Image (cartoon, rainbow, N blue to C red):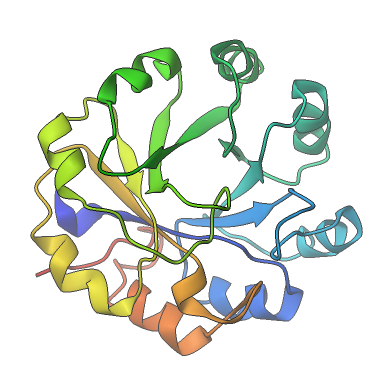
Amino acid sequence: MDKQDLRIKICGMREKENIHEILEFEPDYLGFIFYEKSSRYVSESQMKEIIKLNFGETERVGVFVNETTDKILSYADRGYFDVVQLHGNESAETVRALRNEGLEVIKVVSVDDDFDPKVLNKYSEADYFLFDTKGKLPGGNGVKFNWEVLEKSKIKKPFFLSGGLGVDDMKEISNFNSKNLYGLDFNSKLELEPGLKDVSKVKHVLAPLAPKGGGGAVELG
């Protein structure tokens, strides 16, 4: 994908008014974390109010960690999300089952300097990979990994780049050499506090926008 067409995902959303403000800038994806141990956990009662907002063309991503397929599907049936992101040690069978139900699946893979691309074979049925920094928490550690690991691995499936991305990384991303880089996943570096995004930082990441109706593509480099 041309770097001018990179998709932008803002993850860890929770506050309805904050979400309303960010939707004005038309991100491609907003992520909602349904993992109770996360500091950005969004409850069902919050989500029932959030989905009343007009999301336009912005897709909602439901983030789960080692959750049962039945629970994920029950949340999907309630309209909480359009795409599911699996952030734990889910099986290939879970990915297959969710895709068989018509859901797009993003499989998160934690990366450090010892990353072995062969691990990706297990999740070949996922629609996308999302590469995050391997750390103590499943996500939201706010730390970047060595991107050269991915460049050397020659990833063949479209993927999101994650792990401590902030407004100051856009220039460096323009030099990242991987033809299958599909999108950028932002979270903790755009926050005022867990679950509350700094609207000015989000605006900076999403600007300049593509023409209205064209999604949140950004111009890099």
